[in-house]
Image (cartoon, rainbow, N blue to C red; front, side, top):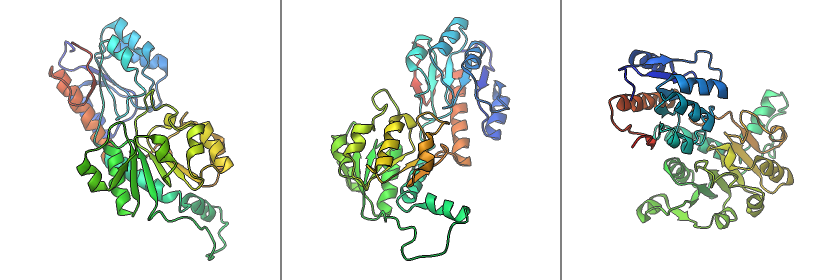
Length: 331
């Protein structure tokens, strides 16, 4: 807890104006009005000077940053603007006795909508069709022009049946997809029955049987390169892979090779392994839809994320346990 009623809060990126304004009213806030991502040196400097750091997915809050914080002895709360915390070294945060919070629950529908958009876009070749029109190469309707595949009746395999995975499953059922899923723990029978979902304990077995694969799990050491060359080889040649979770879950080099060799039919990607860098091979391959990490990019979602960040900080300032705690940094 800071000694002053207005803790020093440093925000690493531009947030919605209403969120920044409210923070200015409540805290001694330092905003990043240029929206230029912090370097590691800037992150370490911020960690020395603030009580609360508000990072985003573009910040690598690593051991060096927390070491700088521990040396200064001021930073006590890392209030992440986002759900995923794979960019934050939680072990180092624990050592530095820094509490970490996130913003769960408010991005479920936005992300699930984007997943569904990609599920529709890739088999129906919407990206290719849009380019054809924009480039002035469309010669008019043809009975055999721009043929794709319908999704009704296809099998969707969801990797990670948490909030977002479940929301994707419910949307998919409305489009006539049959839902399969792989999860660390099986869902209760009542939820499986509601979604008419089939659980696979063995991920490899599911991958070999489904037509569309949607990745909706978090990025952890266990899921890093979960989808690699070996697993691409298991998939049907007519299969499509959709990733709106984290780019590091898919071995991007193996993905490019699988697409080039025709091991799978296509991919819809909203995230990339080394973003913002994108493997140039993906830009030229047919059957690929690429988006700039915009799955949660709605005005409503960003506002709700900011409100959760503020709520976590205010509860912490009042000496209580923040509602969206990921790691508790004090005894």
